[in-house]
Amino acid sequence: MSTSSQNDAQETRSSTDVLLRLNQIIGDAGLLPVSRSTIYNMINSGELPKPIKLGPRISCWWKSDILAYVATMQGES
Image (cartoon, rainbow, N blue to C red; front, side, top):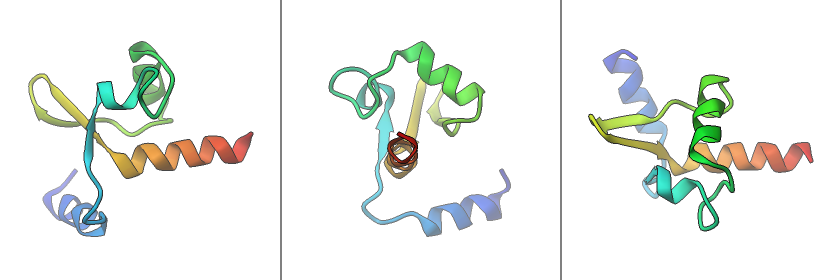
């Protein structure tokens, strides 16, 4: 992603949008009741966005992106 498109994406984010780690997204207490491997399969298939890498071992997703996916899944059922 180019620097200008990254800046555009950041400007459209709500000031209340937060980054979530994987353990906040999956599992019984998470937003999606699926496994780690299922999340990465969903990313590879394009269902979920790729994570934002904050470091070599730190990946995060915007909460709004995950909630948008949940909303589309609820709309399909």
